[in-house]
Length: 236
Length: 236
DNA sequence: TTATTGTTGACAATAAAATAACAGGAGTGT
DNA sequence: ACACTCCTGTTATTTTATTGTCAACAATAA
Image 1: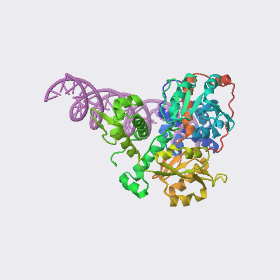
Image 2: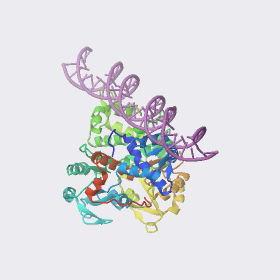
Image 3: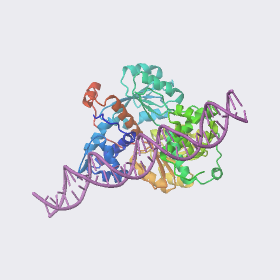
Image 4: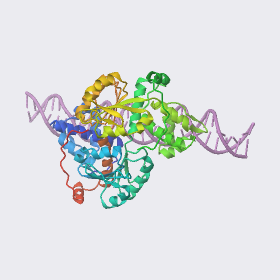
């Protein structure tokens, strides 16, 4: 593929969205689309769409637009979705299990091969056919099986150490759901999913829009709900 | 609170992260911190930290730095975390259940009051004490109970309609896990969590770092794993 | 006291991202 | 085949975000 100039993160973050919309168009048997039409659908300026795509090559044709199927497949290649990825889940709690049960990952080529946990009640079980192993076995597993991505869904007290171990044993990507910022070698790639952070930004916006002028104390009284003091525990 | 100049989205997205770090400092009984020290911990420039915080007021003191507890509480107020939020989950599948089971939400004041689904096997059950109702009852519920946020974890075929209904019935915020971009009135706030998109950007980066020059076909052969054609089904 | 160091808040400079403008090739209709 | 429209790829402009700098002031030490 091409490996010339550096692509900006903003562009990379938009790629999956293009991919999703093009997939939708493909399902609707739409064979061609112009940046202007796509712009209307996606709420992005046509200019940005063209500029984004041109980072990776000229996929369109003047006077015609973009061929949907061709562009879809090109973006698939750019994202690296034309191969299989082997993944493991570390932490078999709520979120870990939910991800294992999410069948669409497999359809896209993201295969969860194993789950690791410390809980004796989980170890030995299978979740949708995927076995749960003791974390003690993780080193052996990772060293003997290809693991592209480790999905970290464990308490933050353990996340940092586990991430470092996995990095040491050769795992290249970490999809991190634990509530902490990982410190890993620079050749290891981390993508954070901080669900609570995401919810908090939503709450900020709700407050800004609906309660910004208002006295907060009044608002409490209105709801009749006193705020309980928070004592933070270990969190997943 | 203050409602003068518009705060940039980039700043708002960083706020929860400041809040998290300050919470950590508080737990470590650190009472004061300078932007420089925080900069080192968070990998953000000290300049940006000061500028971010000064969007909301001067919380620091020259020659001293910031009082951790004071700043923590100020950010809490800014984010609107000093009150309770009533939430419902729409879609009782994997992710919906995982979120209900995530006990830390409640500790922070985010209370999930009800789950709605269409699956008869789920309806009537309780998940960690939270009842699962038929979606038919959702309108009545929303109209008679305060709902700040609806958590949407349903297939995308249904998500758009449900979101519109909820907006019509007065729900102000949508935390959207379904694989689609919602079209809602502009006074309704949506925060998207597209997990698959997040994973795809990680895969892009892995490919860029490790396989960018390489011929992809070769790579397939190396793994011995042919790519199966994907036929997209309904996804949650 | 008085000097010295540390640190903010404000603002200036730089960098990054988004949008707009446009030249020119490709399609379309006559 | 010719004119005309559509639409890309690319360059220019504007907007937004980040970083660097410094005066003013607080804390601390002499």
